[in-house]
Amino acid sequence: MLIGSYQLYSIETSEFALDGGAMFGIIPKPLWEKEVPADEQNRITMVTRSLLLVSDDHKIIIDTGNGTKWQEKFRDIYRIELDNLNLEKSLAKYNFSPGDITDVYCTHLHFDHVGGNTKIVAGKLEPVFPNATYWVQNENWELANSPSEKDAGSFMSADWSVLFENNMIHFVDGKESFLPEIENHLTYGHTTGLMHPIIGDSTNKLIYMADLIPMAAHIPLPWVMAYDIHPALTVQEKGEILPTIVDEDWIIFFEHDPVYQAATVQFDGKHYRLKDSVIVSA
Image 1 (cartoon, rainbow, N blue to C red):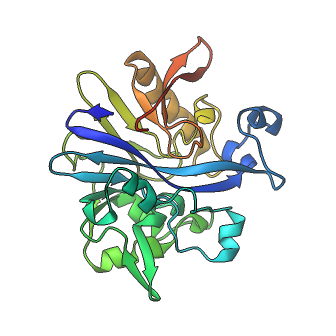
Image 2 (image 1 turned 90 degrees about the horizontal axis):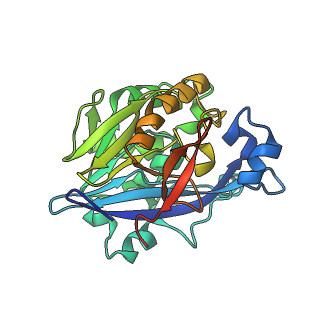
């Protein structure tokens, strides 16, 4: 898919699983399980999906997934699988490598979004993208480095410490635009200062939803995660952006849906729902 000066590629980086109840908050299991079946441990199958934007001057990857630094215990808890889907394999599918990436857009610093920022080589942390600038929102950086007890398990300093030490992180203040032809939308319900890139031209507009709408099943307003720091605010933020998405026929890109890369959205008079599936790249 081409939007503006960017060729877009869907980059799947891992398969994993999280508790279905946590992923759907107050929604009863008999309802959410119709949309997303759970395993015997109540976990639902998910993916980490990055978006690669390629222009003449930039190769930008939006989020980097779970990464490879996991101990076996946690790999089992989160059912992380890297054999079928992984970052290097997905980049290579389109003839790219980590060394080609010029910019890493970090929507927020939760481990399943930036775990692929770094790797362990011979017992030491190294950047996965050695030639890239990593873009991080100021407010989310502050939270990640001084989290509440509820947030602490979602942030892992190994995902960014070596980048900071090597001056590879550039900080973003508010909604300022920092990459060509990319708008920057902010939300605060899931976590403080969650950035959503918007790529558009005269024909198409695509927004990377990250954890505001991580899967197609999360399109309806009250279907939000227990992981959110302010679930009611997430509902409000969805209610503010979804009318524009519907009216202007934007494409929404799903970071965690194992079936849908992206989609358009419709409003049936009562609920927001998936309209048409969109394939960003085959």
